[in-house]
Image (cartoon, rainbow, N blue to C red; front, side, top):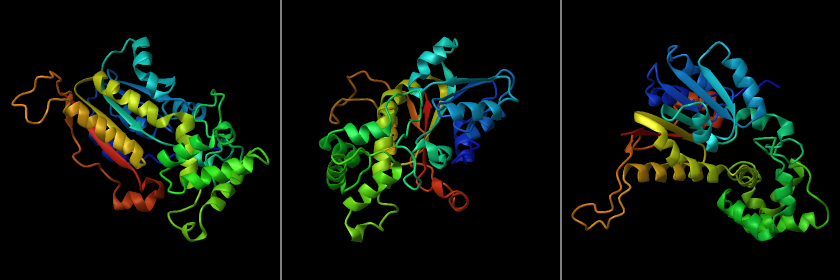
Length: 310
């Protein structure tokens, strides 16, 4: 199937990057290159765009989409390796970075990738198929306590304990192989009166397993401050999140970058010596417009936050 992904908050992100046509920009999550195409089309021959993605299908699709530009470099790697990969290209500082986090529409819709609870497929959920571990390994090998922890923390599901218990009880009889098998186990673990609330009962468990498998929150936590450090003065970083866990990390790291002082509030002046790295541009996150929500239902939980380097 074709790699199709409707870019969320597209105009808002491009505007937020405040593009200098001779600058160097990085898209850390290329996907189908919707955002990247708009960035590249605003650059002169002196400008440059470097795009990262770990997904083989995304690399193929974005290479095709961006082939008309001769100042674009595409790297197959997780954005956690951005600094190292940019250094390999002789780049130390950039003028803008964007991240569109989470799973793409293509990954959800490509049944064989095993991201969706709606279609029968092998339990996979890898964003990078070079990795050996799949969702099947997590579901069948994690202890009940670890399953409970990730479903509670990454899925924010109040029935996490019961879901973990049901998964472990089921796999004692047979290995859990498919997405629909797991979805049914989760459904059975949730009391009937709660099953119709907030979408499919397996949604949060699938999210939790996907986040754990692809280390999504860990990568974000470990990389974001480093990306801020890579920005030139007045350079901006735009981050689109799709659930509260991601958004909280971005919000907190941006706050720390703006005001890193650790002195007690009653101190007359700062003695810790920690200097601000810049300013948060978005006091509150930018949300999709009514029109975008109508045209793309998957945008409904999207939030955009922007930080500018001093």
